[in-house]
Image (cartoon, rainbow, N blue to C red; front, side):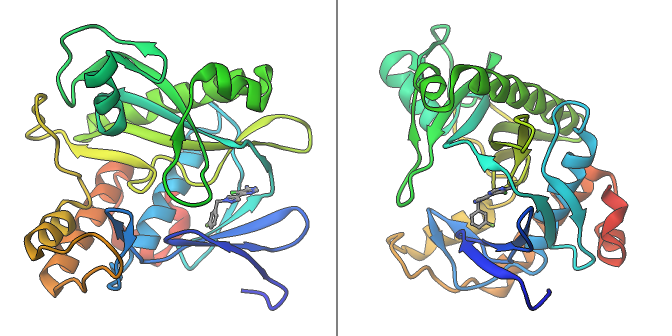
Length: 286
Ligand code: Q0Z
């Protein structure tokens, strides 16, 4: 990294740097979070898997929506990006009934203002994907809002462009992943506006950290589905009796290895490329 690089901020598992007035550097670490707590034990190559997947999707969805990717660095974990004016809402697209969507549906029959058919089960596929925006809470959880409120916050035209892009991106990713044995139950997009005023996809895209990935094998609505990537970590954390407040537990080697294997498997299934080739030459995903 150049000595002029300025650290702008830290996410739970990522770092953001300024390269110059127009460009940012997004660096994915090997940290993993579960139950909203970052664990002390890294998962080797997790940052490379997520960066490689984001770059793969950015390269393949340019025709669906423009995105902020300028370059994938040779370290495999850093993306050079165009600096955008980020929209103050996240665009969540849900194709399946899970998480807070399932909770809201059981209580009201609706999810963020979308009335859904009666009789849906947990983890059922929705008749059509729905968009459920959320405000980026600086601390704590994201707050789901209605599309009407998101449109007021972003401006109606900008919100409509962001929603349309998010739906098209989700449909593309969900269909691609399903053919490779992974259900993308839902995913979160962060979009921004470039200097020309165009709505542009930013942040990460269709990664296991920004999405709920489920294995298609064994998919069975009517119960919660296992996470494709984090289930070993969750199961082990539950077994220890940890109360889910910081600090999280150190992971044993077999949980680290099993989890790394799941991330690598997601990468290889979705990209169709051996992860070893990505490590040799990250540009192989572009
Ligand atoms: C992304 C984030 C991270 C902390 C700002 N292209 C862009 N233009 C302007 N801003 C952003 C982007 Cl991606 C931007 N974040 C999220 C990422 C660490 C916060 F790695 N914040």
